[in-house]
Length: 455
Image 1: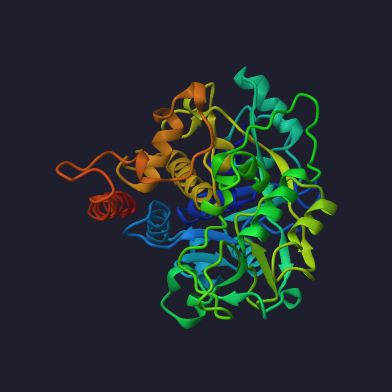
Image 2: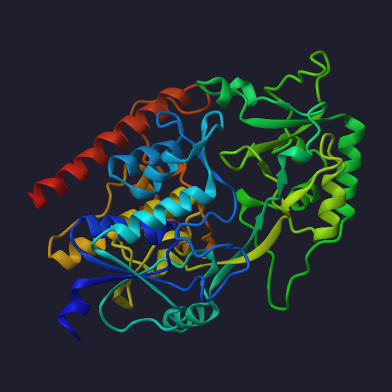
């Protein structure tokens, strides 16, 4: 094993987690090689060869760092000079209280930043085996290649776990009937007029909603291949699966009519509302919020054109469904995110069983710092458990029940209680503020401790 190999950090996968891991390690002075199989080896979900390409939603979800766990995760990543958050902020789109991103310029800018870093090299090609020496992070995401997935399976002795992730369709703005639809964020959220009008809303009467549900239930769906099971992650359920759980489920989910007033008919309260969120800075594309689907393409076009305002809709991309792969992290990883059977390998991102762009990038940030510290010979404890990042990594590396382990978004349910605070809905605002105040203090102390070591 060469000295160069022992001092270099190799990262398999240039998605959110891999890109962030590379950035953090490189900024700590470690030489990093990103191994990215695209564009040489394509996936059905990706369109480009850019690093950190967004393939599903263009939203990083809530940006509220006082009352929302994912907003707190945003704050922690910004405090750690995270690349993904910096570029998301640079290319943000109006989205009320959420952080939505102009996906193509975002991925291009992440790629440019990493390519320009003197400590980062990108090598294109597929890694098919688990490396036996050197320092490695596997951040292959939910679309881990078949060969590498088989190697992971052979090493861990456990079947790979899989769930199905469905992609929402994107509509050309010019094809939406603005005599029916209107611009408004729910409850007029947002500090600017642009943010308060970040969503397009299509209203439905009771009859229209019932007809839509009927069509949804009757539509042709994607069939599963032999040996596959439809183990959906609840945060990304296809709309037809939600409809199968009850006719009113969508009306209390992505199609809820609350917090909106139809500007065309102010006195008419819609029975249900379909929302579309801007998908690019030009405002030429909108994605249908929460409308992940496994309907076949022909059926999608027919069913979605039943939505008032979308009768003549033209689609830039229809929805799709794909198999996502993740490992049983609570049994396989230690608290440093290392594979117990091969400690030279760390895992990061969605393949560890976290769900969402932000969570994936956060696990990359942590893995990159931990790996770099190990290479540099400086001991670094994992993130404090009372931080958003610490709560999440604790969950996947031991806090979760291994037998029922499934992908998890960051949420306050993962946090240790704060003494003396009321439970229940009434005390929620004070409780969440206490969580975020405590987390920010602990996270800043963790970062400061590393700065002192570097000095």
